[in-house]
Length: 199
Image 1 (cartoon, rainbow, N blue to C red):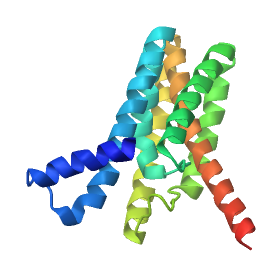
Image 2: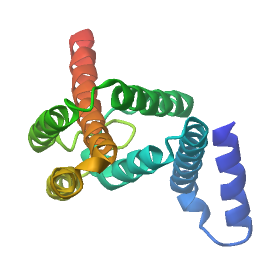
Image 3: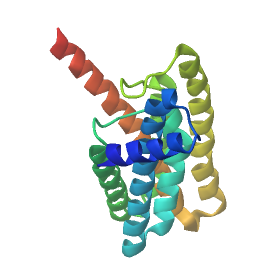
Image 4: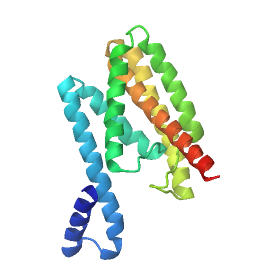
């Protein structure tokens, strides 16, 4: 359904001479990605609104936008799997945020940030057959990912020092950064599993 919609939109763009027919496949992929991202983001925001976690949803989406596009990570084979994974990921982070005792949150957040930085510095960016990258893109993304994870990790640390009463915001940032690092680990594990199966 998503592919058909992207094909129809690309055909409209070709008919109106907005894009060239030779670039249709690229535009179909881009349109599918855009629609999928919008649908997932809107769903997370609606869910968050109903459970009273709108700020957490904005943090989650913003950090994913700023960091995951440069680190890579788990890529589902189908858009509906990516949709379900993203929604479940958000729900799990909200459960973790609400279940971990307030007294432990600063220590847990710091530990998660340190682990995340180590994973991202060592493994990011991870590539995927669904989204291949050139050596130049990989090198550029590595630099950007490292800078961004350091900056994004510094915000909750400094935020906690300045405004400790906003611990839930700082903790959600740490959880989200960790979820991206975890996604990288999943991707690496799945690649190794595929390599073993191919042998």
